[in-house]
Amino acid sequence: KAGVTQTPRYLIKTRGQQVTLSCSPISGHRSVSWYQQTPGQGLQFLFEYFSETQRNKGNFPGRFSGRQFSNSRSEMNVSTLELGDSALYLCASSAGSSYNEQFFGPGTRLTVL
Amino acid sequence: QKEVEQDPGPLSVPEGAIVSLNCTYSNSAFQYFMWYRQYSRKGPELLMYTYSSGNKEDGRFTAQVDKSSKYISLFIRDSQPSDSATYLCAMIGGGNQFYFGTGTSLTVIP
Image 1: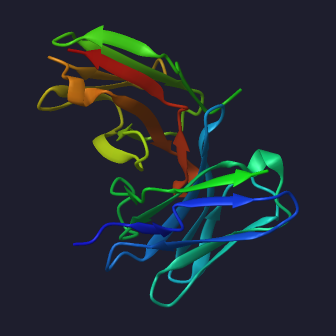
Image 2: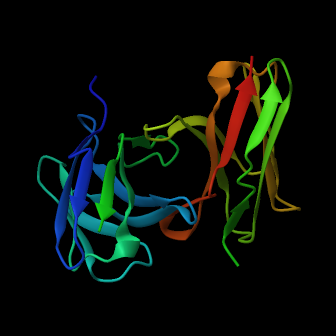
């Protein structure tokens, strides 16, 4: 069974631009969660989607948004990029009913210049 | 105060040593506790999962939860160079939201 895939793996943007990251969950998984990982803050929860609906949301500004499609693939968008948005963005999928089984993708490394 | 505190290390031990990794937390409502391992340039992978207080053993790994002290530990016996990675503790809070520690970087020296 293929794992969680994320595209692109690396991205360089400049301040003020916007970016869209993509995540394809494991086949059959309906829940997709997004995290931001930085050396100082660790893994911080952005939001979770389940069956195309946002089910949980972390404490990030409205510049961070996401959506999920009917095939469970998810996208995350960051508008008006700031230097502090440079991070590894991780996506995790789960079947949705068991919170211990969350499988992570390799992440997208975003650098904002 | 952060919900979950974890010493970032780095921690360096000789091969064969017993490693102890720890996290403290502030929210007494946390019931589910996990440890993830993250290799360089990879996403975290689930190592251990425990519910409420107690111990759980899986091969060379033992997870302990002490809810009265709000303290969790991961022990690695007979550590191997392949155990070199960053170890993240995680807990599930209200609304099934995950809270992660910042991670402890471990190096096992052959």
